[in-house]
Amino acid sequence: MKLLRDTWIVFQRQMLLVLRNPVWLIIGVIQPLYFLLLFGPLLKRALNAPTNAIAYQTFVPGLLVMLAMFGSLFVGFGLIAELRAGIIERSRVTPVSRMALMLGRSLRDVVSLLFQSILITVLAIPFGLRIKAADLLLTLLLLAMIGLMLSAVSNALALKLRSEDSLAPLMNAVSQPILLLSGILLPLAFAPIWLQRVADFNPFSWAVNAARSLFAGHPGDASVWQALVIVVVLTAAALTWSARSFARSVR
Amino acid sequence: MIETKGLRKSFRSRQGKQTKTVEAVRGVDLMVREGEIFGFLGPNGAGKTTTLRMLATLIEPDGGEATVAGADLRRQPGEVRKRIGYVAQGGSTWDECSAREELVVQARMYGIGKAEAQRRAVRALEAFQLTEYADRKCKTYSGGQRRRVDIALGIIHEPKIVFLDEPTTGLDPQSRAHMWDEVRRLRTEGMTVFITTHYLDEADALCDRIAIMDHGEIVAEGTPAELKREVAGDVITVGVNGTTPQAAKLLDTADYVSRLETLDGGGLRLYVDAGATAIPQIMRTLEGAGIALGSIELHRPSLDDVFLEKTGRSLRES
Ligand SMILES: Nc1ncnc2c1ncn2[C@@H]1O[C@H](COP(=O)(O)OP(=O)(O)OP(=O)(O)O)[C@@H](O)[C@H]1O
Ligand SMILES: [Mg+2]
Image (cartoon, rainbow over the protein chains, first blue to last red):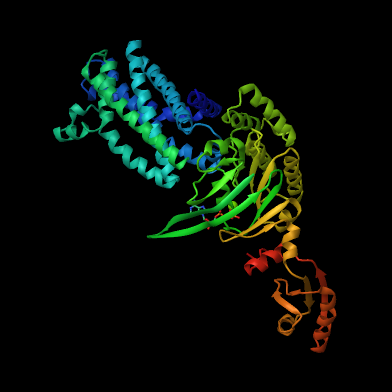
C-alpha cells in the first residue's frame, strides 16, 4: 500500500538522521534522568512510602509520561527547520502521500520515545524498581500513543505558525499547567479537592494514574482501560487534525 | 507543454493591525513549447516564484487555468507532480545528509525502487560532477555544488518539464557558465526547461524563448531576437564630460531622438530611428552648443531596452 510504503521511506530517512546524531536522544533523557537521580531519593520519606521500591513505583511512571509529553511536544521545532531548509517543499512536489510525510515523522518520535522510556526504566532498577514485562509493554503502548498524539499536534502547530518564536511560548504556556496538573511529581491525592477536579480534565493525569497502576502490578485496574480509551480517542483526533492541516497547508 | 490562462494569485499579509493584499500574479497567459528552454525574466517581486509554485502544485491559484505536461493543474495535481521537477529558489538540501542520500530518498519518494534509486543517484552524481563529494554532508558543499545537488534532485525521476527558480543566483561567473551548460544538457536530453532569472544576459544567451514579467503581469513574450526587434530603431550611448544635464536638455528636444534616458554612470542613452544618420546629427548639435563629446557608441537594443520600453523602467536599476 502506497501510504505504508511512503511512511516507511519518510520514517527511514528521519531515523537515519536521529541515529547520525544520537546526542539529541540523550539530551531528551537528561531531564528525567536528573529527576530520577536527584529527586527520586527524596521520595520515600516525602511520600511516606514503606520502601524505596514502592516510592519508585509511584515516581517512575509519572516520569515516563513527562518524558512522552515533553519529548513529543517540541518536535515541531525540527519541522520548522525542515520547512526553512526547503525539505518539505521538496517532498511536496513529489507524489508522496501527504499523510506519510506526517506519519513518518511521528513514528520517528515514537521510536525515540520508546528507546528513552526503556532506558529510564532500566536505570530505575538499581533503585529497587520491579515491573512485569506484560505490564511494561502496556505502559509502553500508552506512552507510544501519547507520543504519537503530541508529535502530531506539535507538527500541526508548527505548520500553522511556521516560526520558532511563536511556537516556543505557546508550547511553554500549554505544557507547564498540564505537567503540574498531571500529578507527575507528586500524586494528586495530596492536592485539595478543587485542584483534583481540575486535574480530572487533564488526560495526562489519567495516563499517569494508569501507568502507576501498571507499575504497581494491577493491569486490571479501571484506571488502565479508562486511560487507554481516553488516549486512543485523543490520538485519533490529533492524527486527523494534523493530517488535515498537512493536507491543507501542504497541498 | 505548458499552457496557462489567466493564472492569478494574491496574498494577504498582516502588517501590524492592517491586512494588506498583494496581487502577486494577476492574469498570466503563457505558452511553453516542448523541448525549449523558456525563460522568465523580471525584477524582484515580479511574481516569478509565485507563478512557478502554482505550476508546480505547491500553491493553489486564485483563478485561471493551466495544463502542465498534458495534465490539468487543478483537477490532476497528482499527475502533474509525476511529470514535473521543481527546484526551489532557496535550495532544498539538508545539512546533515550527503548528496547521495538526498538523491536516493528523493527518487524513492517518486515511487522508484531502492536498487533503481541507488543506480539513478550514481548516474546523477556523475552527470553533475558531484561524485567526488557524493558522501560528504551537504553542509560542507560550496554554493555551486549545493545548487548542482538541488538540480540533480529536481530531475532524478526524469520529468518531462523541470522548473528551475533562479538556478544561477549567487554563483560566480565560472559556475554560472557551468550551470548554463547543465541546463542546455537537460534540453538535449529532451526535457523542457522553465527557468527564472533576473539576469538579462542569461535570458538572452540561454533561453530559446522568454517572457518578461513585471508587477505580476507578462509584459512581453517571444524569442530574445523577436523582442529586441520590437524595439524600433537603434540605441546610441553618448558620453559627455561633465556637461550631461545640458546635453540631455539639448538632445531631448531634438526631433531625431525618440526617447532619452540618463544613465547612472553619467552618460546618455538615446533611442533613434536610424543610428547611421543620427550620429552625425548628434555630433553637430553638441558641437553647436560647445559641448565636448567624450564618446559615442551605436548598438542594437538589448533586453533591457525591451524592458524599458514595456515598463518605463530599466531592469538594471530596479
Ligand atoms: N507567501 C507569501 N505571503 C505574502 N506575500 C507573498 C508570499 N509569497 C510572495 N509574496 C509576494 O508576492 C510578490 C511576488 O513574489 P515572488 O516571490 O513571486 O517574486 P519573484 O518574481 O520570484 O521575485 P524574486 O526575483 O525576488 O525571487 C512579492 O511582492 C512578494 O512579497
Ligand atoms: Mg523568486
